[in-house]
Every structure is written in structure tokens, then in C-alpha cells.
Image (cartoon, rainbow, N blue to C red):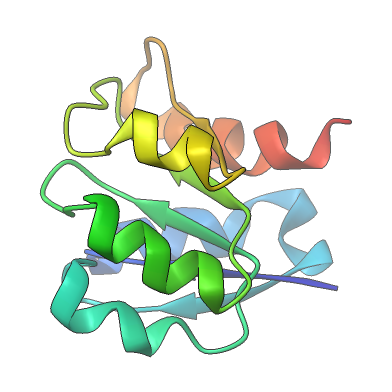
Length: 117
């Protein structure tokens, strides 16, 4: 079972992510704080992270989480300016995002992306 670490979560995020039918196939770690270089050690055994607009995944943060075993960065937002895409590519990490969304569809879409080969 894959483990995904969710950052910058609010109660409504957790509610929707728990309600997704595929949620039973993914172990979830919810964090209320932001993912950035000084909080990257919180990644635990996650293979993927799910982040929002205020998380900061610069080169230093990406190196830390990649070293811990993360191979996938899933953004639950349309923007991706908070991720160093060049560093992610160099480190062999996939970055996926929501190209456009309705607020209630974000959880379902985010779960669907990494589940499809």
C-alpha cells in the first residue's frame, strides 16, 4: 500500500480525501504545516507528497524528500510555481497537477492521477 504525505491540510481537505472510494488503497499522513526545506524530515516513509499553493518545493526540499524515497509530487492546485521543476526532473521525480478544477473534485482527481499507470 502506497503512503502519501499531505501537507497544508485543513479539516475539509481531510474530509474529502477520506471520502474518496480509492482512499482505502492509499495510506495517508496528514500534516497541517507546510512542506518546505525545514519540514522535509516529516516525510516519514511516504512515496508521494500531496501539496498545495503555499508549500515550497525548491531544490533543497526536493533533494531531501527524494532521498527519503519520494518519487511523486502531486499538487492539489493548478499552479506549479512553488515547485522547482528542473530539479524535480533531474532527481527523477514526477510532478502532477490539477490543470483546472472545481473545489469538490480536487480530492478525487488527486487520488486518480497516481493510481493510473
